[in-house]
Image (tube, rainbow, N blue to C red):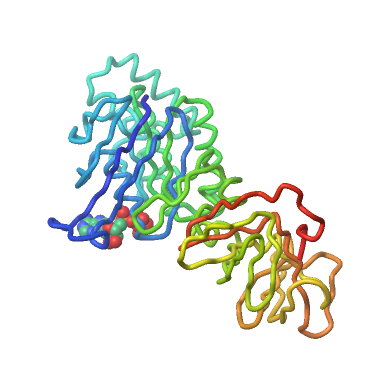
Amino acid sequence: MAQITLDKLAHAYKPNPQGPQDYALTEVDHVWRQGGAYALLGPSGCGKTTLLNIISGLVVPTRGRILFDGVDITRLPTEARNIAQVFQFPVVYDTMTVRENLAFPLKNRGVERKLIEARVAEIAGLLDLTGVLDRKASHLGADAKQKISLGRGLVRPDVAAILFDEPLTVIDPHLKWQLRSMLKELHRKLDLTMIYVTHDQTEALTFADTVVVMHEGGVVQTGTPEELFQHPAHTFVGHFIGSPGMNVLPCAVSGAFASVAGQTIPLVRAYPALAAGRIELGIRPEYALLRPRGEGLPVRIRRIDDIGRVRIARVELDGLAMAATVPEEASFDGDAASLALDSKQIHIYCDGHLVKGDPLHAASPATEGV
Ligand SMILES: Nc1ncnc2c1ncn2[C@@H]1O[C@H](COP(=O)(O)OP(=O)(O)OP(=O)(O)O)[C@@H](O)[C@H]1O
């Protein structure tokens, strides 16, 4: 068990990287706390697998260090790291029984037979595999095989961390939630650091206490699911998390007012010193309510989708596409409507990055909504 520190880690697969475009991983600094349940979330190609493979020792980084409990292990081979890795596809020996598969990593390390038996029984119990211990792995389905892969990682009592690389890819959708809750349960029972790589926000947000969001080879935000939703540190996080994602609109900001498509929007923070750059306003559809035409931003309704929990309107504000929430009781005649924004939930970004701004001390009622 260990705290894992990534210290200015960068990696290029090309031998002579010339610039940031040649790096699969730009500079990453991060501490994985002992016992944490983490998700590493990002779209395909953003560098998640590269980062995981550096932690497990399958890839040696071009620059930077990786420390386990303060000890530099950057160049240590995989076998010497005590990291367990579960891949997209189950890694099991089909000709062996489930029991033999689970015992294999311990047998390999010369662990005493009695200890192996006890540990295999314990892990099989945790993974609900006791009933199939003496069956050949080849006779089992993908979900049971993936549980065996997981068990082979967990069976070693000395693992520093367990890394999951999109482990539910081959699992039937109706079994996914079962395995996901099993993983959460295992995390609670065993004091293990778990890092779960996925491009699926639902998997990340339900599994992890802390989500690390990656974009174009770098970490753009680390936080609880709540923090990522309420305070996206980057427009990418706002877009990527949430369904639909945050509205991001080009704007100009002056003091405590933003101007979007010629409309003035009061803010609850002032932005006296915005750097030159691309300035954008972010607001989640949950905080933009569609109202009959009146006070608020004048919009045109393009369509309204019933997504079960709520109705989401696709609207246009002077040519800018936005998503908004339709209150339960609301009904509309024609396509003219207004949007009421919750100004406390408006974020301002410069070149994609959140700008904090200075809170207005005595917020007047006029700043509470548009
Ligand atoms: N062995 C390799 N050689 C060269 N380039 C690679 C290699 N592995 C990955 N890359 C490149 O590095 C970048 C990051 O890839 P990586 O697999 O780490 O991303 P990812 O977020 O895990 O994506 P995915 O979910 O599709 O696996 C991509 O541009 C990819 O094409």
